[in-house]
Length: 300
Ligand SMILES: [Zn+2]
Ligand SMILES: [Zn+2]
Image 1 (tube, rainbow, N blue to C red):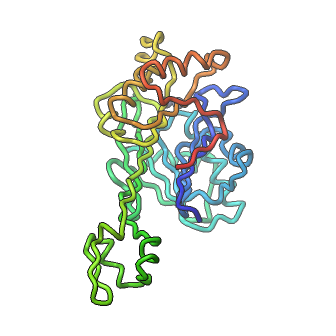
Image 2: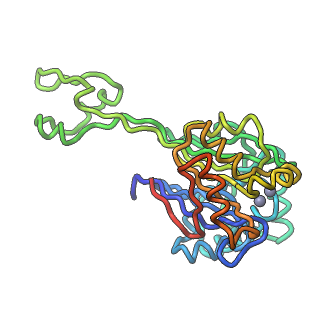
Image 3: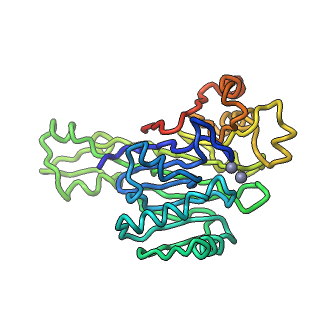
């Protein structure tokens, strides 16, 4: 098991899939967790194409109940059952929408043999001590959540220095993690010398929203921001009408929120022959902008 966070872009398209872009779905893998953000139609096949096993999914985060973000759920739940999935599947959704999952399961007569735990969430909703998940409500005409994954700052013991100083590992090192100095064999060592600080890491997802005041504080200091960018800036009126963001609005958010890297997704098929236009629109304001393809992976 690696300590790395891996994000797989399973679907980078919007409501209408194109030859190369499927409906929204993103998988975040970290330690034993496989967190799926949205599950558009065809997500199961995207898993297969990416060489990933859907049975490894531990949590599903639903941003909102527009068809392009959720139509893959019934099939996915059915497949998990047929594949012997035998752990609790945690599903998180915006406030007031738990009933929709129940209705969806009813509609397709899906009875899962594995337990489902469905929670409506806002604010911090899952914390392992090592990382936590957070939700904030967006503005998209229906209940809609943005999500962040935050790996906490950690004190790590520098094993190379320990070895140099001839200090063995063991429970006597515990206090170093609490920023206390170490006394070993009658000698005192400053914790600063023996430890280093591992920076926090933040990955944020904004899928479908109009511009609102909550976005910037929510995504502040994200290392990775994955955001919808349905319309280019010349289509601002349309973006307003359909309650979406324009590329330049997203780029402006990334800049103001001191984001490190911005990944533009929910790409409309109207730009499939002119992707440069989307990327340039973003780069003009925020240079670290990327347009990932389906099945592309990033590691951090
Ligand atoms: Zn959408
Ligand atoms: Zn939507």
